[in-house]
Length: 354
Image 1: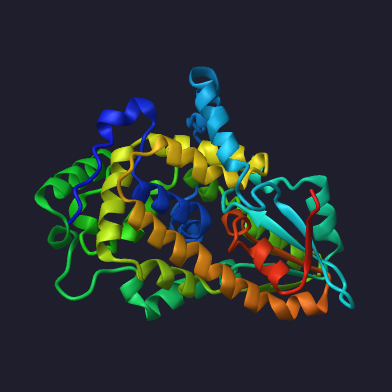
Image 2 (image 1 turned 135 degrees about the vertical axis):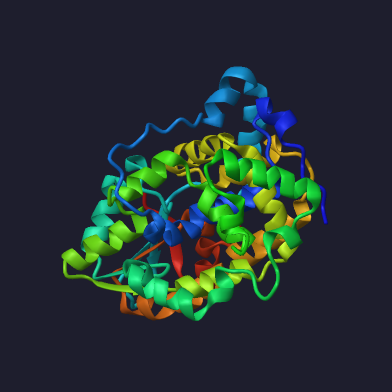
């Protein structure tokens, strides 16, 4: 089993393991929907978000390094832009929109261009429409208990080394979670549960919807058709297909991050506001130790690239109908195998519209 990256000693530099980053990206891009029904009683107050924007920190303390990061980000194909117009001869135009699965107003408030594209659409497509029905998600998970709980005699205790168990138990205890109460939970599910910042979790307790759900609800209220490209179960099965070692190390490293998780979320929101999705990987690559790159590469292939191909295939019918507004996690847009480029390979003209 891989030795956990010693993150505590690097906290002052906001360093984190690549596998921890992968797990946080999973929460931001997929697992946020899981926690919609896990918020319990409604929050009476919503604590202020406390994360620090790492871009601003670099601007103050290491501007040369930030300039290098931005130069590297500029090499990312289709790395800028959240709204893209999709055209093809004989078809009504459609739009592709990159989302972030959070409730923060900076995320859920659409730009004028995105709002206009949304308003003019006949059909709104999100990643998974089953997230609109918490009971349906719960029933689906009951039919797939292996996605939530460890099988047979396996427990976190049997998966963790003594050193890892000490880190996990101490971190869970600090969060008020008795380690024994989650001993049968799948490591990646536990990681998702402890990754959401307190302010985001509290907002969900008040009933606020993440952007994708808000778009679908607004579409329903406006009489638009809605559709999905995936299902929650297919998304979770993709994450579950990654090696157990990946998930165990992700849990350990994520718990070691502590409050630094909030910095990652804040930075992601700032990047999202500016539509600079191609900046994410160069930024965190520059801040990360070199360990775990193989594990991260496998995560990227399974959770982003492979799903890109599936979403493009499943979007074809809606694109042929035209006037579609396709909203998927922004991490799926950029790159040589991102959705923007894959659509171009299918013969569509895809241009920035924001």
